[in-house]
Image (cartoon, rainbow, N blue to C red; front, side):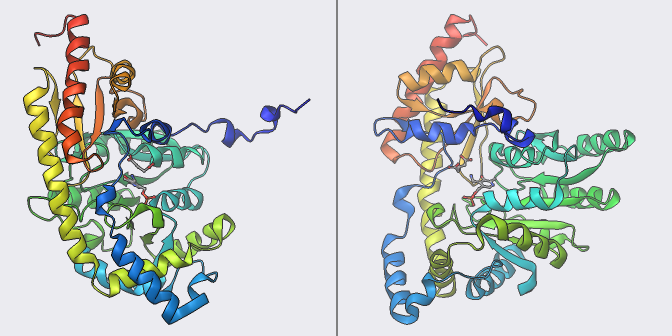
Length: 410
Ligand code: PMP
Ligand code: G9A
């Protein structure tokens, strides 16, 4: 007879829950489903030929060296190439001791959790926010306190009040987690004024800001916004970037830039996890950036994704029933839909899946489980010719449900 190990699991393990995105990924890998679910790049956006050439060159030039273990902080050539690029694209200077390479921003979130969070600590996040970030912080038994996200990003008045409220109860807040540009899941961005105010609030209350920035280079229109890190005068911003959305998530390469003491703790936290990030992937990324492949590539995928975004917005406009509203993102990968009050995006998802189209339910992104009538659509992954078809199927599901609930005349 096999043992039942449940009584042996740690308190931490008992609280774990599956990512709704990861669960859906299994389903949406089925070939006949049109998936607007996972935040996946288009497979057509991967630079297969350039990577093939780079790998051949690396083997020729460096041989087994690129297959060896590396340091925990990451390959020197990649850290140098990234620092130069961050200076150019994000407007901040940092030194080699300020950067660590991680196995994806997901690992960066986990390491931040390991380094900063004790059970019962409070973390301030958006409502909604990236669900795998809150899952990562919850693993350290932290408590999520949420602040509404609006058209211009996090509501700063609400944030100030929320912090005061928590401090009145003498509770510890460790950091504010934000995705300031083309936020996941809503696609909205925090305004310049909002960024300045966020920094002032963090300064006043002596909090860290965790700036998660996978999407800022995927801008299709509008004015570029400064990174919060570029305005940080006292080292309270921990900046996280990744190549997942602009090059390839399969390489699992990302970085954290922050004060030396923070980076050193993250190095220590990473050692027991995986010793180092995959060396070959780091060398590929380093060459891809240092040899100038990256900019023309991003230019190319911006055009590709702009077209996809516009196809989805057009289809939504043409097909969605009255009463359904959505965001109009200037970049990134997501459009956020709000169904009429009284609708439940979880029950419509079941119906959508029978119609072979998928999205991620909105309530999964709300730390308190609200947002039942919301959902997230990814527009970068599906083939262009499938976007219109998929939105048509979704619109039919919503229209039927609204009729069943007597909500069609909103
Ligand atoms: N943060 C945000 C906001 C994301 O959207 C994602 C991926 N969807 C990640 C972190 C993780 O990215 P990766 O681990 O691929 O770098
Ligand atoms: O595949 C993943 O889990 C990454 C995608 C994230 C997202 O859909 O936001």
